Image (cartoon, rainbow, N blue to C red; front, side, top):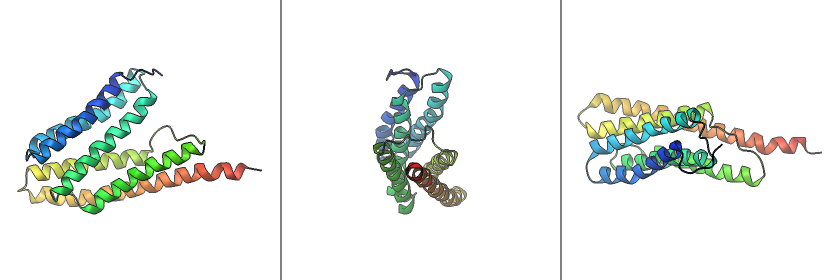
Length: 189
């Protein structure tokens, strides 16, 4: 695996991180349509960077860190912006913040214990990320086109579905890491 920080996938992750302040600035500046465009472009780089990392054989440790970091920063900023505009409930912001904080803390604890972290996110985690991205997209669309009751109804349904997915993925992370924690103790003499 190349150790170069400037691989194509890593550059896409940098671009996604740099898009966050642009997104926030546009959103706070009362330009939700442009904020939506920036969010969609940044979200598309998420799929593209993983695909290119595999295609170009440019998987790096830095990329394994940068990609989920960029995802979490973008999603977190977008959720906060939606909350500020009454497009996302506080419970959603807190649930996602709890999950992301728990994942970060769990990763530190597992590593400090000298255990190997699972190399890839779980399928449920990927579904939760996809659901969250769709929820944010619907929220931004609802904010941009405020006269659509149908879009607002879809946002409510998507919110509960996303919350369920995030809660399940959080539980799965706890179970996976709990298994890592307990398994060595079972093998001890």
